[in-house]
Image (cartoon, rainbow, N blue to C red; front, side, top):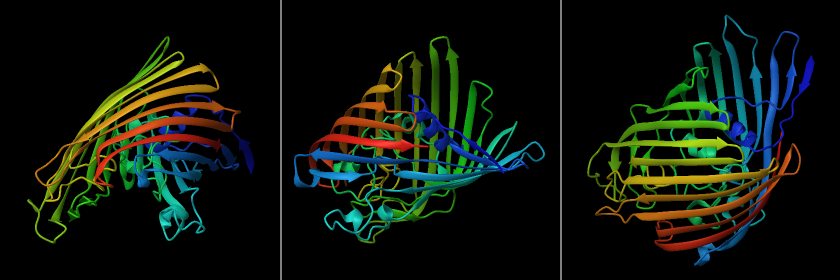
Length: 405
């Protein structure tokens, strides 16, 4: 057996490459073993731990935690077969775990009886066939819709905000999903990626559908009879000073058997959800700038379809958002960041909506090719926080580090 060891320096840009690989169904091998017959086995991953203090304007949004960052720690395994008939087959299993595991701290519910915070989470388990005609990815992987803001957000492998600013959330943090864009999640499905040899490329996928509901009011549609459809189109252009990426994407799904919390029929038995988003990312010398926005119906305001997609009567809610971020790299190992996000979900006759805004400033320093430390200051505001049924204003201080291989 031949053994190859690859290391990736944590320079600015390589982190986004790692996330890009995750979102588009690619393995990013760090330690690789290869047989004489051409089979390859590799592993990659990261460990993230941070301390964050929230100073809110009420008890529930104030506290101190030591947790994973937005993305839990990861260990992944990749297998690639020798090319067969011009097609290369590969697979990946990515096992994620939050740092806030164990059962020793009753106050933080994530440490007591919450399997999501103390168990391995197989967010990625997929196979891929790749050839000159493109790639076919099948299994569980990150979905297409609004993947680009996730890729751009410097907090995805760092700090970020707690979901709805709940200080004792049982999960990892939530980057800036509170305000700016939606989190699509990892889903079972089949995805096609066109060849990347041309500046213009596209992806399309069919995914396991989700319930469409509102966990705060109790309304929801639970029966699904067709897959969720997602797609995206991308334009990549390189120029002397850097590169430009433009994107647009969409999602559509329906569900039926919609009931209110009282068990009564909703305004309509069948609900339909759809959304579009678009944006641009520019790299020019030491500067990286991202701007994106979305408009949606029936998708909610944070986690797509799962939290507040419907009102109390079961009607689809309208939401829209904007996310922008500027990263400046004064030195190869140092990145400085500012981002702003805003999401609005409209009022209906049955349920009050809200406007959420976030500001994050951060500094990220690569100590060496494996280890990075970071610090973030953030503010999050809700005109009406649906978890606490009131306006909230929360400040964050975060110090963290990660090891990546």
